[in-house]
Amino acid sequence: MIAVKEGACTSFELSLSPDAPLVVTVRRFVGELCGRIVADGDVTSRVIVATHELLDNAVRYASGDVTRIRVELHRLAEEIGVVIVTKNRLDEDRSRQLDSILGEMNASSDRAVYYRDLVRRAAEQVERSGLGLGRVHAEAGLDVSGRFEEDSVLIRAEGRFRLAKGAPLR
Image 1 (spheres, rainbow, N blue to C red):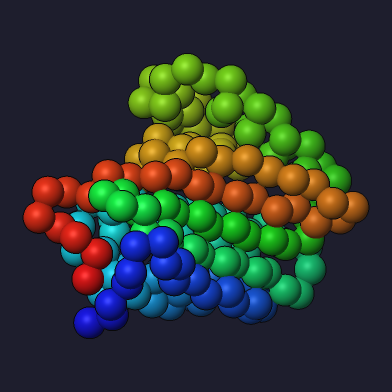
Image 2 (image 1 turned 45 degrees about the vertical axis):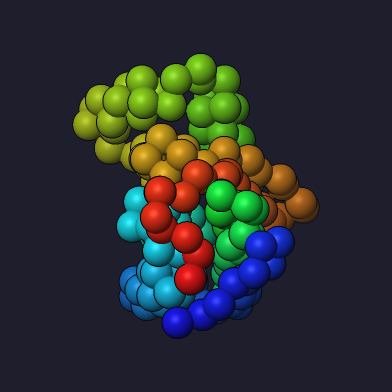
């Protein structure tokens, strides 16, 4: 069991080669870590989904040989703050597609409606759909933003979750 004081931050950062099997390994690690820190299955599930989808995208679309991920869990009284950041190199075409996906997602006023529409459209598409980021936005309930730097992209997902009654940080 890991003891976490109010105001404390537990975080880790990894740099890894963009290798798809590593996504599952990192997801399992994050689930185990979060489960030891937060005694709330819903919050842990949200963090696992977001970590998996963000890292999967970073690995899948990376044009370089390094992908980075940082996960932060912040103790905030009765809440937990979550920040997940990925960084990888990205080609110009994918950068434009990603910028469009993020713009549409963040312009949506209803996460669930946006995601249902995204799923419907994805069924009709052969190309990349944006479903991973849509899951982070709708299912994990995190705000997603992107920052483009030369040939790299930094994707940031963040949010706060009220801990379930009787489920304090451990």
